[in-house]
Length: 334
Image (cartoon, rainbow, N blue to C red; front, side):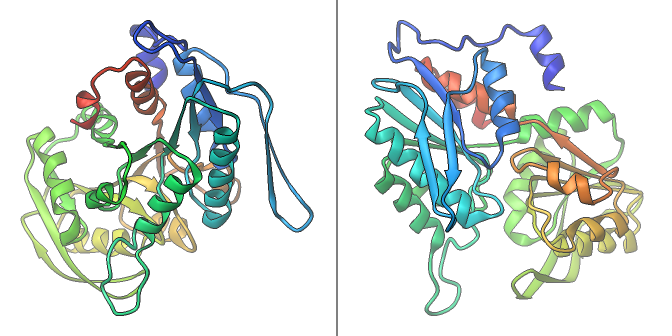
């Protein structure tokens, strides 16, 4: 899909403009080099030269292989599994570029880890989303770009410019091209209603809500179905799939209530533990995710014929281009 778009649309130029005299440089951490390469190719230039190694005790070593003095640097690094390692690597990368006298450092984090702990729901809990925001600022980041934060209010944790991009346009294009009939967009829980409603509005489709309870982490129990799904094509729409307990329980609930076909659609395919096996066994026709998290290793060990992975290269490339050219980001938030 992205390749076809590139053939019909002029690619952004991977260079500075008169409005921004600082040369643009894109570097990739080790978390998702495939996506980083796609973004650089879309923008028409190579990834920057970067060496990332480990000492024998697993300490991370970073060395920038080219001059970055006075440059606008974009570091692409989702903080996916292993989350702690990739997060620490990102902090070290930012510090290295800061000490290399960059003009501006933007952390592009397609999947922002630790976002699920965004408030205290019980006593004596940490708010890790705020902690990570503070760590990024302390390391030296000047701006952050994320994709589909678990909760929109996390944007308020940052004391720097930050852009939380929506994947609605990417998802919408794919669904429209499938020409599905009698669609109902389903939120797998009450917390995702606003996200599902916005997507349903684009499709001019009704919504339904699955009322669930979560007795403990990574465990969900479906209680009630709110809305009409019988005889309809149901699209379960969420921001992430982790162990797939919620999405599979929701799919079974839709099946039991007479849904004709069931699609699961989310931005971040974490797919930890038994997730892939659960999704393959669930009454779901297709699981649609993006490449915010790399799927290469998972494909080596699992049957993923049911999965469709959409690329975020154009979305993130357009965001970088807008910032570099001092343009408007409004279209990317729509």
